[in-house]
Image 1 (tube, rainbow, N blue to C red):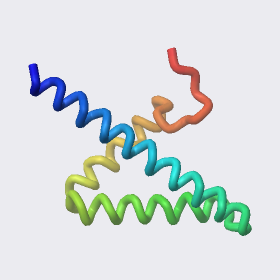
Image 2 (image 1 turned 45 degrees about the horizontal axis):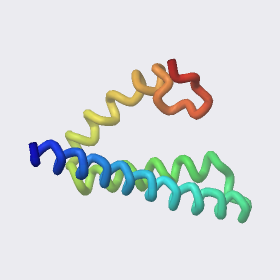
Image 3 (image 1 turned 90 degrees about the horizontal axis):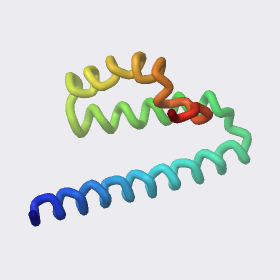
Image 4 (image 1 turned 30 degrees about the vertical axis):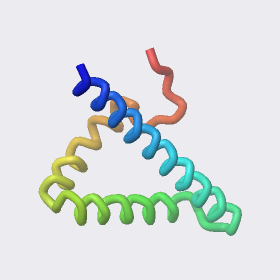
Length: 86
């Protein structure tokens, strides 16, 4: 019983941390756009930073496998902000 409670709490903490991280990134993104940095340049820089961090943390092969699954996830709308969830 306690194992599930600990797991649920861990999942919630991870969710909360990722949400906070996203808020920080959104704030930095908005500041950069206000300073005249184009969204496309920001996107490329963010992708580079994210992938470099994943490679450092998990290694090249694991990161390559994750990135290889992205096209299908993109096609299924996982990264579309305006998608309708059914």
